[in-house]
Length: 414
Image (cartoon, rainbow, N blue to C red; front, side, top):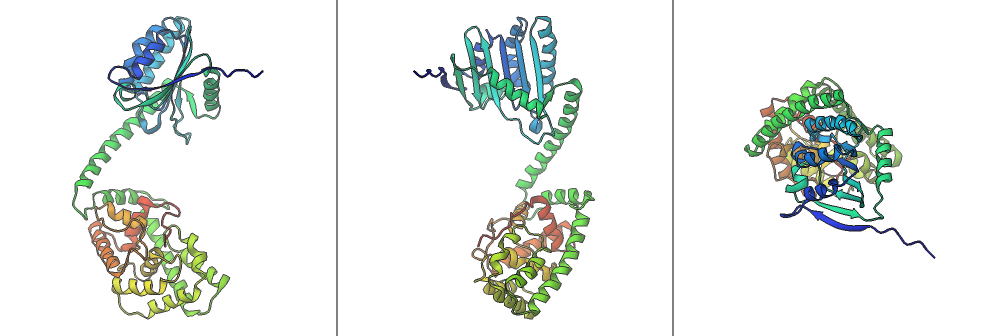
């Protein structure tokens, strides 16, 4: 005969007009001998809703463990200090309060919202979306599972989860020095965030072509003297552009390249460009080496510097070359003359959006962009370049990449 499964009673808990998370927590704290609270955010607005009930149980020997996340600097230091004060009161009454906080440099976000109670009538757990905040306990649209009954034996599991986080240094015991340090960093973060929010509000309300956000990004990029900073990025692009021009000329002069020979030459070219995703399309492009080389020779022979004329010229040659889309096409034009031809890809379209210059396809392609549209894009890019005081469109593209670049983000969707 099989063993009957342990019974667990489950229901859903929300914040309503009559009942909410606060009421349920009070109901179970009133008789709790043990309590575990694991939350991503702990704010005073939530703490004050349960502090009296916690103090009363602490005076009667409550054994409790609190784990509080510090991600995004949402948790308030005064709640952590209040919990530390509760620790000494618990010791006086024969109870125990343990307090752990998220390790700021752990690389993992502490995100659970769990409230577990053990008392004379058994165990109950509230597991869901409610943080220790007024919104979580009362004001927000929250939804949690309420688990109770003789089968709801979660204490061992929760203790093991906490011990694992301690062992991996994802959480650490909260000390005065750690809380003080967190508060100092939080003050800096919140002040900078408020300033950024004010700038963002001005930027969103500004007319098309404004440079509020881009100018801030440019100042940040110029302040970085490392390899990702403005000066080194621009110099790196200048050197690579010279190499790319030589490789384009060599490809154009060497008709008949096929297979590995063409792929090696093309790979050498795109390694000197700065868009993402080009590596993924190189094998497909290498299947049409004659067409690609013909496009390079046609571009070299064309005397016009009109963006619309040159874009349509390359587009005509690229129509039957898979993965040779707008990104590759405009990198070629940009290499030819960074004073006239911007790179057009996802990053640059999003970069334009930072100046409220909109209306371009999110992922530019041969199907969605023709010469006239590219020429308009070039006009907008040149206007931004002038307003930002940049030397050429390569510097503007470096700024766009600084804001948005991710590996493979700019892969052509042809």
